[in-house]
Length: 387
Image 1 (cartoon, one colour):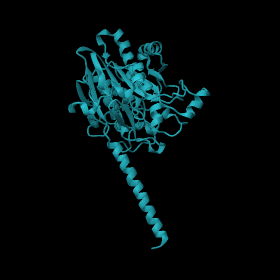
Image 2 (cartoon, rainbow, N blue to C red):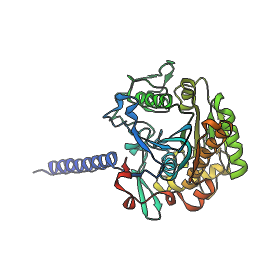
Image 3 (cartoon, rainbow, N blue to C red):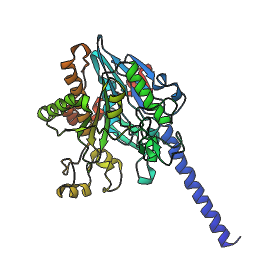
Image 4 (cartoon, one colour):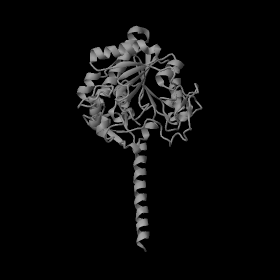
């Protein structure tokens, strides 16, 4: 056997081994299940497909948790993981899910709104497959997700995405982006079915407040803020002012653009009676001019390149050697959700949503995110849900 044949055979074996190992890692990531503990406030669990049957049996279907108070009132929907590469949303929603006590009204939580997107990541950009949150009982492991749904679940992409119903032309990728496909349609692409199901939930459940949680780059002006349309602006403004004055972290309000369609904070308000809000907290991991996209960068937000840019005044948030740790981001989201509910309830007593036993910004920063997660080994099996 010639050296050339031996060399080619060896290369084939090496390439085959790398392909198998890489494929196995991606398969394991797609099917990895994180335990979610339904806290004592959870009264019932539905599937999103109950509002849009076209989702049933697909990887886009996901759990919807209801926390109903003993006293009737209004209803608030919290949506997390619209973009699954912005994990502060998921982590915040789980704090509510595992701890919240609803005294009046109903809190509805969708932790993995784009369930498909949470099961793929951006390997080409060096994203980690997983990240870990320290808790008093050990590390809790999470999948690192992607901004858009996996092509395994929705394919092929069009050359141009024509938004329904406005017919605005958007990027081809936006057809897999659940913050571009609102208000959705029952017979559209899979992610249009996801947003349609959410709209049906909002309409059928008579939701008063809909909060979509996100994270944005430090170099992007729409960060560290609440995005709201005209109908939600008063509550958003009062929330922002209160957070800055009482809790000491920066926050501002951005108006929802009328000419850019498909966004939750625009379409929810236009196609239902609900008041929509979108929360943004800084996530340095998503900025382009950073070092390697490591788990540490995701969790602590420390990057030497961003620090230099901050010194040149090129960032839209305060930034120093302490970075932007996950606890600050999650704490801001917790406080913003609670404050929106409070501001709404003060003016709408009959439709109030009153929530207790959820930490605010200062407590999350002091104790850490994982402090508020329950140990699955000590939870009742019927209260554990895997996603």
